[in-house]
Every structure is written in C-alpha cells, then in structure tokens.
Amino acid sequence: MPILTKRLNKTSLGLYIHVPFCRSKCQYCDFYSLACKDDKLMDGYLDAVCAHIKEAGALAPGYKVDTIYFGGGTPSFFGADGLAIILTTIRRNFDVDNNAEITFECNPDSVSDKLLHRLRAEGFNRVSLGIQTDDDEILKKLGRPHTYAQAVTAYQRIRKAGFRNVSVDLMYGLPGQTLRTWQETLDNVLKLLPEHISCYGLKVEEGTPLWDYKEAANLPDDDLQADMYLAAVELLRSRGYRQYEISNFCRKGQYSRHNMKYWTGGEYLGFGPSASSDFAGKRFTLTRDIQTYIQGIRDGGEVMEDVQEIPLRERAGEYLMLRLRTQQGIAADEYERLFLLPFQPLVKVLANHRSLGYVGVNDQGRWYLTPKGYLISNTIISDLLMAQDESEPIRRLF
Image 1 (spheres, helix red, strand yellow):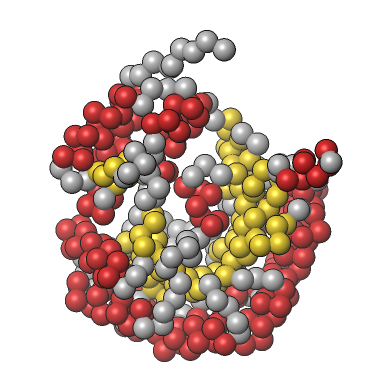
Image 2 (cartoon, rainbow, N blue to C red):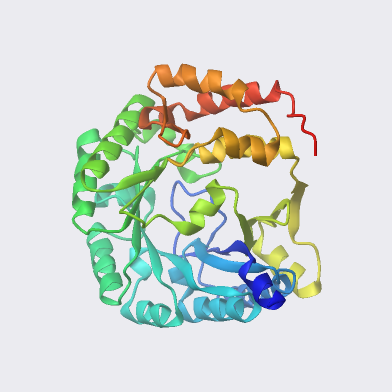
C-alpha cells in the first residue's frame, strides 16, 4: 500500500525536446536552429539527447510525465527514426502516463505518409503544423519552404494517418498583409477544422534577417496589428474556438496541456541545445550551441547556463505575468496561499483596469484580462508588480 500511494502522488512533469534542425532558416526566426542536413551532426545530437534523458530520468523518480513536446527547429525534418528513438528513451527512463499528450511540430514540406504513420504507431498523438499564412507570396518573403497548397495536403495526410488532435500555427502582422487578407486566411484555415489554432503577431527580432530590412518590408503598424488580433478573437469565437491564452484558441477541451504547464507554474525539463527547464525549484537553460551541448553530455561537462533558484516573491510576480496570459486568470485565495502576500493591494489596480474594460472577474472570483486587455497586458502587469513590490508579507501564526 505505501508503494501504491507514492505512485499515485507523483508530481506532474512535462518534457520538452528541442530539435534544432531545419531545411532552411525563416527570415523572422530567432530560435536556436541550424539550416543543414548534416548526418554526422544529427547522429551526435541524437546520442547526446538520449544520454541526457537517461541521466535526468534517474533524478526524477517522484515524477509522472504527462506531456512531451518535440519543438524546434523542425522535428519532422529530423525524421521519424530519430524522434522514435528519443521517445523510446524517454519511456525507458521516465514514468510516462498512459494518457500523456505527445506532440511534435512539423512543417508542410517535411510531412510524408511514412513519417506520420511511423510516429502515430510510436505513440505520438498531437501534431502542430506550421502554416503561418495562405498567401504564397508572403510565405516566400518570410523564407518559408512551402506553399499553402502543400500545407493543405500535409494537413490532409495528418488526418489520414489517424491524428485526432491537430494544431495549426498562423501569423499576423506580416509583410504586405492587410486586415482583409488576414481574415481571409482565417476563413480558409478554419475550413480544415483543426482542434487548436495559435495566432502569433510577428515580432521583428534583432539579429534576424528581417531586422536588417524591416523598414522596407511593408509591415503593418501597431494599430493595424491590434485590429488583426481583435478580428481573430471575434472570428474564432464565432466559429466555436475558445480563447484560453493570449495567442491560443481551441475547441472544447483541446487546449495544449504541455504549454499550460508554462503558464500555470508547472514543472518541466528541457533537452537539447537552448532548451529551458523549471525543475525542483530551479530554473536553467541549456547551452545555445549544439557542439558544446554534444561535447558536454559526452564528456560530463557543464551544459547548463543561468541556473537560478527563484525567490518566493519573484515566483509571485511570475504567477501574475503567466496566469494573466490565460483565461484562467488569478485568484486571491490562491495567490495568498502560494506566496504569503496580500492580494488586496492588487485589487485596486485590477478594479481600475476593469472599469476601462481591460479586466474581468468571473463567478468564482478569478480576475482575467479581456481581449482588449491582452493588448495592453504589459502595462497592466507592470502596475500589478509595482503594487506587489510595495506589499508586506502576510504574518501568520503556525
């Protein structure tokens, strides 16, 4: 009986595997990835990731893995054999829940029937397809290696292979995009009937190719991006998609369980160069260099960077920042119980923004941001953090 009780009480854990290989690098991408097909480098990466997983599994006997996410880069470009080996290694070294959500990202140009059937047979049960837009001219400008017709064909293949939980990624604020063409993109993609849609506003990051010619890229301004965002919220709501996070929408019950860990303070472990972790009270990032990562794992060297033990007050600030990304929002009793800080100083800030239509409160007393509130979320969260910094801890007798 004690053994059974311990097993039932295991802590939930998510695993993220960063696969840093792509066919080509997109003009806007600032994620760590390599545009190459170097079999030797890929083999070295595979060996290192599997060795790292074995090492970490021995340190997590009290955890039950209920989400696994293969991101990138382009995991589908890496190939089914490598992804299957990694998943098998995870199952051999971690306690994986029978109903775990297991996701892999893919691009339309690297989807094949063979890959899909193999991964479905291996236990992958969720696919995230990077479509971005239905405009081939914009896709070309972004450096995307596919057309919209390829995206539709890839989606159909995913369905034919038996996947019943499919997410598609879209972007707005793209070069030459208008409000009308963005709405047309949404209309076209909605005809595919995915379970989940992510809509991300383009951010031009320093160090990317797009940064160098952003002034000549004919990018929508901030006001037009805001209109695009609100149009997406309304259109998706009218088609039965619930907005459960700033950029994410789903049919009933089909939210990304893995990503919700990030937004609700769950624990997760990352593998592969540049992957991040929040595990056992510490946060750390792995080296952003594949050769350093491979060599470090092989030789027992250091691969972790920026290891931090997060103070409770800082965790309280993260609670505000991350939970307010979601429609779940924040609650007084939860905040005070977790962080021993008074919620009342935050109420004045929340009530003020509520009067302006940026914040709502539901029947359970949870405060959340409205779609308009999401557009100024940085301001609202900054106001809350200032109020939190001035508050004194709750004094309790134990």
